[in-house]
Amino acid sequence: MTRQAIEAVSADFARGDVIPFLGPGVLELVGEPCPIPVSPEVLVGKLTANASVPHKIRNKLTAAAQFIENFKHRKTVAKAMTDAFSPHVAPTALHRYLAGLPRLPLLVHAWYDDLPQKALATRTNWGIAQGVSQTEHFGHWVHYFRADGSRLPNPPESSFTIENVAPALAPEEALNWSTLLYQPLGSVSPAANYIVSDTDFVEVLTEIDIQTPIPEPVQDIRKGRHFLFLGCRFANQIDRLFARQIMKRSSDRHWAVLPGELTRNEARFLEQHNIERIDMPLAEFVAALAQTRLNGEAACLAASP
Image (cartoon, rainbow, N blue to C red):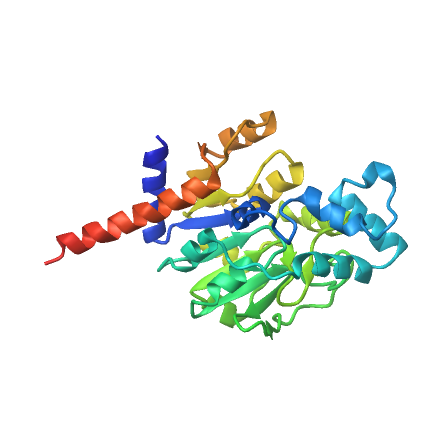
C-alpha cells in the first residue's frame, strides 16, 4: 500500500497536481544539531531564553509570544524570531527535490525558516505570498514578494476600519508566476514577517473560515489538486484549522507522511478529510519518492525511439 501511494504521489507530481504542505518536522532532515528551531517547543525556548515569562505559559508558543509583545514590544518578539531563524541552513534533499519538479504550481510552507526560498532560487518565474501580522501591517493579510525579495505593492483597497479588513487580493504579476510559495505563518525572509502571538492567530482564525486571509492565487491553484503533508502533525487545533482551511475546495484525495503513533485527533482529522497516511520516516519517503521519479524517467527514455 505504501509503495502504491508513493507511485501515485510521483505520478501526480509529474502532472503538477500535487501541492506539498511542509511543516516544521521537515527540518528533521537537516540532521543534528539543527541550528534553527525544529518545533514549536524548541522555538518557545528560544523566545523565552532572554525574557521573563510566567511559568504556566513558558512552554506555550503563542501565549509566550503574546506576553512578550504585551510587556515589552512587538519589535522584541520580531527580533527574537529573526535571531532564532537567522543561522544559515542549506536546503534539504526534500527542498531540492521539490524545487527540481518541472511542474510545481504551489508550495505551502507552514514554518518560519527560509529553506524553500533558497531551494527555489534555482527556478525562474516564481514568487512568495506571505502572511503578515495585523499588529504590524493592519489592513492586509498577505504581502507578495518577487524571487529577488522585492515586495510587490498590494492592489489599492477601500478605506479600512477594524470591521473592514481587505481580502487577500493579489497583484496581477503574482497571478502569472509559474510557482507560488505560500507561507501562511510568515517567514524570516525576505522581510521578517511572523504570525506567532495569540493576537496574530485570533485575527487570522476569526476570518479564515470565510477564506479572507487565504491569498487569491492559492484559492485558485488548489482547485482539484491533492495535498501532500510533510513534516506536519495534527494534534494541535491551530495546525488542523490552518490545514483544513488551506485545503478547502481542493480534491477529495490527499496524503500525509506520518510515522509513529497517531493521536485520536490526528486519526479523526485524516479520516474526515480523506487523507491517506503514509507510515514511514520522512527521510525514507523522500528517498523512495526520488527513486520512483528516476525509475519513471529511465522507463520513458527506454521507451523512446
